[in-house]
Length: 235
Image 1: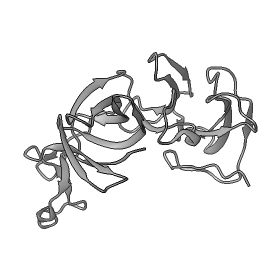
Image 2: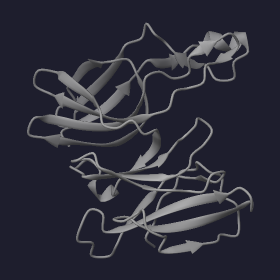
Image 3: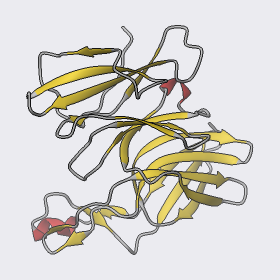
């Protein structure tokens, strides 16, 4: 890619919160604009673009096009809004796209879906390159991560893999097949916590057809907390 992108958003530090009994000194700051900072990887030149106020925890991917940069993210309209001695319940994140024109420093902001998701992952071979597919976990409620969704980012079509009510799952981790012929030619690894049994499962899904039955289910010896990050190391 030609740029590194830093997210300077409307959540920031306020150390006076410690004096009020808060454990975490960060909060939504309505007077703080949300901005994208573009740093040229060739010259280190810095460019700023203001966007609608928001908060972003995780980026799907970003890549160059002939018109500028595409940045796909999971976006929140606000986060860590304070009330009395605590915080309001956070809204849930959805998939958004920022189309950045680096010449005139303009941006088009588009919501791609209304499904609540988090922890997006791609075929990481394509990090920083144009990618067609994205996988994420569904978040039906603030305290519930349950289900997997696969997006075609060219058509916005989605396919869902359901997880039993009461159970929870972590993020989907993509593993390419050896000599893969396609971006989706591989597997998704998904850790699922089975609440009634108090055990975890590692489910292996066909990344190109996630709605089908798992290819395999592995039973680890130890319970894995839902929501932990994961990575695949080939050897």
